[in-house]
Amino acid sequence: MQIKLIGIWVVRALLLGAFLALTLYVFDWSLIRRQSATLLARPGWLIWMTAMYISAFALRAWAWRTYLQRRVSFADCMHGLFYSLFLNHILPIKVGDAVRIGYIATRQAITWDEAAHSVVVLRLLDMLVLGAIAATGMLALGLALSTAFFWFFLAASVAGCGAVYMWLRTKPYAFWEKHLRLLQSGLAGSGGILVIGTTFVSWLLEAWVVVGVIRAINLELSFVQGVWANSMTIAGQVFHFTPGGVGTYESVMSFTLAALGIRFQDAYIVALLSHGFKFAFSYVVGAYVLLRVPISFHQICDWIGKKKNRNE
Image (cartoon, rainbow, N blue to C red; front, side, top):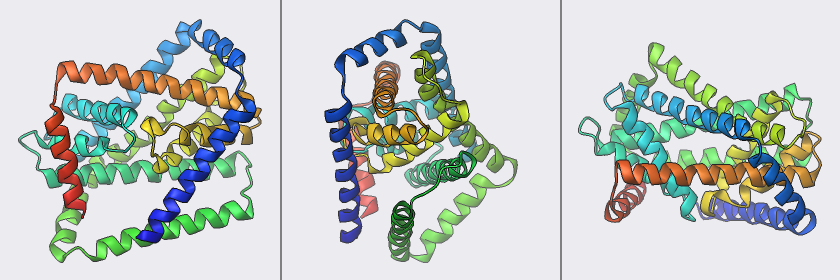
């Protein structure tokens, strides 16, 4: 586990270093200001990006509610997702999932274990979908993996699977039995198809944030390429260690867009503007849930502590 932690921090340091290097060599304040003004002068694109981003979260809320056998309301699922998004964008550590679990577990029909199980499964499903889109995109777009990147990706995958396997080995049979039963009930039949399908479509819709920025500032990129760029970038957020993944997001997206033929300076600006849009969105929905369904700081700390204790 110590080796895994060191590996994670090495990757984080590399991504942060890449971001600092990009900032040092391609940062142009006058160009950023000009492109930001261009984006703001296109309210049609901003409205479309907002609508698609909200729709993406609506589909994830629908998938979550379906997985939980519709024992919670759609509104509760949306509020839980919005709290998770908001907290992940104001805190340097990812605690959004703990609050998402705690919030939905306060609904009478859902226990903490069921809520935690659903969040973990849907997070894994997100990563599987993003990974599938990223891999398919590399083939469809004719992008070749370098040998070094291939072995790095393979080693990271093996290390991740090994760490999960070692953790699961410590769990008793009752743990396996309970969670396999929950998994079967959540993904069985048409409900499972709906959960997987809506999760997939939600990531297609979120890609419009990136594509919208690119179209608004008069750059060229197809929607399919935008989906691939967004999927690669979000998958890279597993190494998130700053509020909203600042640095990690910009590094991965800049290099991904550069691989698609966009010059680094423009790719960097697209990353900044699309990430800025997501920050603004997270603060707006955060203010909304704090006013609509307020929770206390004590509750948040309690949920974070409860999740940490259960993971140990």
